[in-house]
Length: 246
Image (cartoon, rainbow, N blue to C red):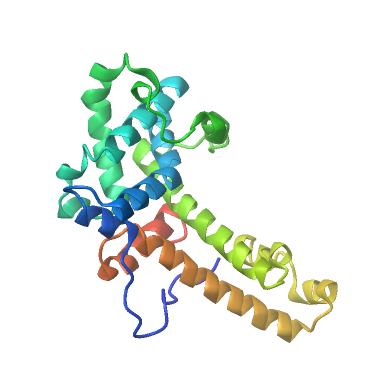
């Protein structure tokens, strides 16, 4: 897999305002940019919470209802007042708040199905149970499954961004992605070079650039979910451990 130690941006570049830091700055009052950032984060990261609920023994229908209800309340900023430094990462904040909803508010609100009639994202259309059935039958805890799915979501977003970027430049991403996701040595460079009509050395240089860019994009995705640039390295290490690659 790619080297995630690459920089987010060229040396000396200013750390961009992240989605999560923007949301944290807008806990009070209305901020259109913060609202949009929070909604984007919710749409991207609903599945790890659904998987957590299912692994916790909650039924598929109730897990959908609970996830929907949670994001309705989050987007209405009912939970943002509870943010404090120990929950500074969006990942940590979401799970801690979701657990609280499960143990307290959900039981009282259980009669209000599908987010009380408010739909912010169509979970049904995402086939959440189909995805959950593909989870390996291992012994990981709900918390561990959440962390693993969070990391896999970030990897997926990075891969999609890289795919779009490379295909827009006319590069054969689909053929080369095996060097990001496949087992080392699964496709010899000589065979791929022959298939693409290039030299082995040229192919190795292209793969090196692809891996480097992948690392940059992955770190950029991580940066969107933390509030300070100093948190990125620690978060990357945590995600690699969650994926089993640390």
